[in-house]
Length: 502
Image (cartoon, rainbow, N blue to C red):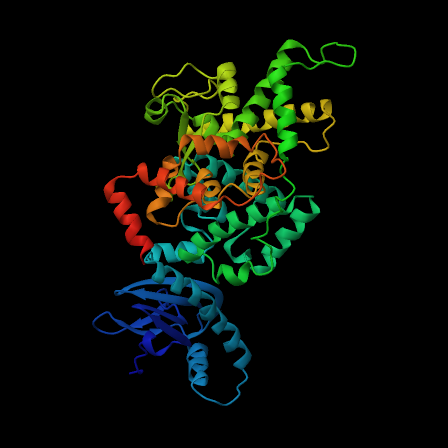
């Protein structure tokens, strides 16, 4: 009676590894091995020794198995011979073939590690990923879209739109078929080079890279991309921004713009109107809005269009307005609060363009309170473009070399007040919503006397006269301190004194 030939697959692994309960082996698939003879009990006794059997990667998890073909076959005897040779240190004729086969198990290791570490391992998911089917069509683009939607859901429509614009730019330049494996330092540098060749500004490239870096970090956290962004974005210039030192107008130029706006005339040397009424109204309206942003503590356009008549406005009898900087309010509410005085110039702008003061009403009738976040972002972007367009006309009419945009208001406010040498740095910082020191006085921009606020902000349209730019004497400083303390409660004064004694 011939000797029974049973197959013990556990002893027929050319290579294997085990990772956190997932066992993978490079073996031969005998499930369809033809039986040539059975014993009296009907069990297989002999098999077709000439049959070519598939070489597979067998993945086992909790006694369940998955067989992944590698595209090659072998007879049973040849396979056992290779497994035997693998245990030897001697060079055999099949050494090259064995090395080639073992690459399959080396290639599958990262995939197993990724799925197991992410807590998403399953045999079906493993099969799809091995066969090139990405789970749920997950790509760098779908991850990006997911984050864009999350921004919208969290009422961050502006950030979402910025992400979408950069995603579209990425797709135009790098194509629609970028895989997770493509993304490395060389890939990022290639994108930077292409953006430069496309003529994009340094700031635009920097913003694009910082946004993409955030997306890549999400992918790394999900084990979709290997490596780290520190090395991946090294020397790419992702943190570079163009200098804003030249993006401001001096006090004399702002005075020139204000006087032009106040007069409300745009005529040539012959006294003829330069613009039709509709265009003229748009020019002066947008110039007035830009002046309001500058005089109102260097506001962003988004904050200007969202500005409301709140309780603070009415409690100060229309002498002050207050808002929370939309860009930073989610990070630090105290540091984002800005209170600014309604100067005579601001009041004239309000008289010409603002809504009638009503509690909860927006100051300017430009952007409704009932718009969606996406629609608000669209309106803000449209007005930014409108201001840029109208200011170009004003600059030409007034023979100005610079063509200011809405972003110039903020930098001009800080630069011009700082250059006086009189206005305290603290006032400038608090006025712009920058204070985040955490000390007790950082919360009291409202504690600045209105008289002092009007005095400081008057320098925005009035140049310092010779002799004015001198240090305040001790009496002035003492008076200011007393005014500040008068506006504090006893508890606040006690906290301030305790802090001063440290």
